[in-house]
Amino acid sequence: MLGLGVYIGEGSKSHGITKVVNSNPRIIKLCLKWFKEVFDLTDKNFRVRIHLYPDNNLNETLQFWSRELKIPLGQFQKTQIDTRTGKKMFKRGKLPYGTAHVTVRSLGRPEHGVFLQRRINAWIERVMR
Picture (cartoon, rainbow, N blue to C red):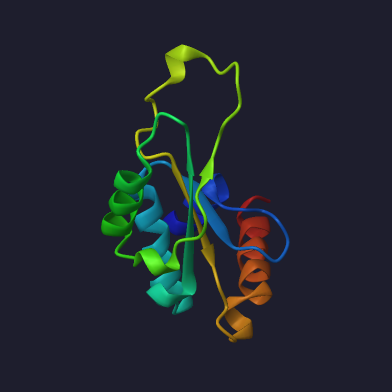
């Protein structure tokens, strides 16, 4: 139930995509543990995309997330850097390692693809009644 609760707050509700986004590695690790224990996923099922800001150090951030999540850099996708202008100065440095977007890949197993998202959505509907 804890994993489902975290997913309700931090997970993707898009159809067909199972993804968790957060800046706190402890939250992401909790979700990874939930995916592995409840849905029989492995580290190979995960892809990571990092969202950064111009004041973040790209290499340091990638090393941080790879080390924290124990996912090799080869499973990381292209990093997104927010280059919007006019952002408030007081927000700089608030997310020293940006946010991690962890997406589940099915690797050819239907129960880890769209069916996984449907299963999670059904559980969410059930508990949110």
